[in-house]
Image (tube, rainbow, N blue to C red; front, side, top):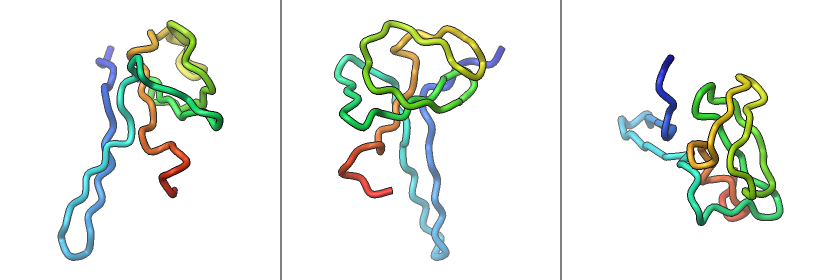
Length: 86
């Protein structure tokens, strides 16, 4: 079994040769809030993405791989806010 991932990076290489690395996902902590539009979370086992509207749960079963994962191990999209244009 492969170990669960703890974060995901997005790497952009510009034509001039510049490299920009952006962290999109980070582990859920006690200060994580969903907001009124919810947040995108990613399973650390299979990397399947789902939207949640609250974090009042202790563990959640992934809809794709059916593994039961504790809340602190799930990854939340840090750029999924109303302030960040997509």
